[in-house]
Image (cartoon, rainbow, N blue to C red; front, top):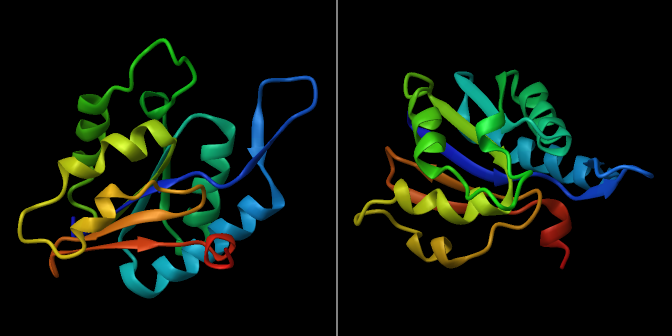
Length: 161
């Protein structure tokens, strides 16, 4: 793969009377903003992978629709049960299974956004300072392996702050 984006799902609201979270209007707009940025970079051969939680799937669906990309959901990228540690080896295996695609974007949760980036950086990459930055909701850490750069793609709500 040439590109990898590790993104955090958009801002959410709880569904009344449940533990389920759905994307808020702001979260949806942030993902549309992010997808416009990605569309100008990644081209056509894109796959979007997400956890199986509603708000991550909604985030991935927006990206996939805008990018005309394949969308896949995996329970292994979920962070529902905080007593179970994130499964980084399995997440890496999933990501690498899409190596034939030109671009892979992941819409997941803070736990994975904190753990995954260090597994893809190389010493000769520019933008390594972004590895110390927390990926905010609706934003993405973006790797270009051909140009050897890392970029932080901010959504509109983060740019306004």
